[in-house]
Structures are given as C-alpha cells and as structure tokens.
Image: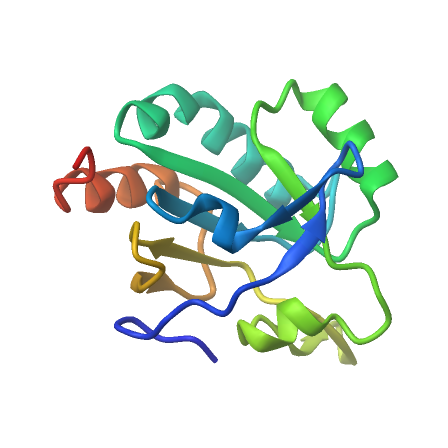
Length: 159
C-alpha cells in the first residue's frame, strides 16, 4: 500500500481511447488519482460527475485528474460519453490488476455475505515530484471532491 510521504509507483495503463498514460508522463504536475470500483454504478457515476464538475478548478491549480478502475477501455469510453467526463479513465483490466494491487486498492470485499476481490474507493493526491501527499481510503462520495480540492489548494499547488 502506498502511503503519504512515499513515492507513487510508476504505471502505464490504457485510457478510454486506448492511449497509454504513464505516471511519469505527469511529473512536474499535481495528480489527483481516484480509484473507483465500476463504471456505471451509482456511487462511481456520482464520484466521476463530481470530479468532472470541478475539473476546471483542478486544472487551474495545475492538477491532472485521472480515474482508474478494472473496467475495459471500451467500458470507460461508454461511461465517458454517457456522463460527459473530461478526465482520462485508465483501465487495469488485466487478470492480476498489478497497478491496483501496487496501490493497495485491490482488496477482498464483502457484500451481502459474499466475499470477492474488488476496488476499494480511494483517492491519492500526488505532488509534482511524484510523492503521495494525501490518501483518502474508503471514500464516501458526498463532499469528497470538495475536500480533495481544498487540500490541493492548501498545498500551494500552482507552483
């Protein structure tokens, strides 16, 4: 699990247009990396829409907003189109979910007595040098994006 004050592990994943994005490509900028369980589910849709609504505010502070889930690029493309999402959505859909595992968000979960592996909703704020500044685990969607934006703003992020 990646914690605050640790370097964020590099990764390269395809986005909704099947273009690759590596974390190292974003060095020199702030990164808001939000992990969500599934395209189209109620909570994930609301979270993505909330980030989309604040996207310009994040960009004005010099931050890239990037979503990650185990869904395929094709699923991400439909999710993007249906919800008019401006951010890149990355796919860690390969069998072992290497990136999701390295960030500590691919975990055993339980729902209605059934255990399964899945993404725990998590957000990381990564500074321009690639260090994790803040980590929010088991995110509750209402108010979360405002909290992330406030934290970013307090970092003097436009530098």
